[in-house]
Length: 421
Image (cartoon, rainbow, N blue to C red):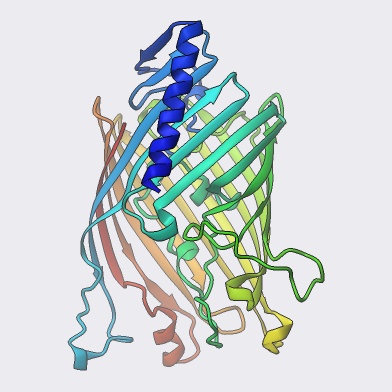
């Protein structure tokens, strides 16, 4: 992996040198991007315009190359209820606490002739296949028709599609990341509603007025931790590859919506987003289930205010070979808001819901959270704090109530300091 990264970096530097032979190369730091589109981070990490760090480009802008890094360090505290703990083994209520590095990203991104954009990034805090965070190139036929190939974010949920490091809270909603509860134990981990990064190919584009966009793609469906081709053909649907089929459409009545959940230099913007997304993971979870997902997104950015809400649903049916006729439906939703009470200070509130044990059983978990963000001027440092409580309501029996929160902290707190360059 390290050799691949070094080889790719050397290739990019060589391309830069070739461009230099034809016309001057300039390196610059851009503190105030000229437009909202310039501010957008196509690589999902930092702005190509150079607001964080610097860019190397030809005088005409035919070639742009930008190295970048993003480091997040966090202190975490998690307190768990007694259910699920074995006191005979001295299991404590306080676990998974201490210091952590969620992301330590080193990468580079760029554009060539405004037709091809590329990105490669390694997450040194990851392991296995997740060490390669992103690796893709994007070919633009025109703004309404582009093709992306490699490892990147699947087109599902506003929470995941937000630029890394520009989320309102240091962790995404629990309803997207926690495993659902199923009454059958098979040879795979129960799925999550969120899909995240994956390998695949996607067509995407926006209309000339930037008020409508779409994404349609095929992915492995194995998630960020697998970089190999491991899929087969479906046994239930003859001849259909067992892949993740995903699509998303977005309406932005006020023009391009930045993939950010609020930051100081967007305080003069007013943007609105509505989006629908859906995907089907054919023979997912080691070929044991077929998982279908649907999501609705809303986001509103109005000067100092950021407001968003999402609803998502997952339907699981077992493959014929499992000989299980039961089907299960799960849903999650959240609403969150952020407001700049001062130029660099943003307060944040979120209420997260999840039907983790399927709609066939009563009871949901709900997770209110609060926090604040401090953007330290002229440093690219961002401080984030949050506290989240996990409650349970509506369960028919105490056993159902106890089982619904297994593995989830009742009280959790996070303090995270982030640096981007």
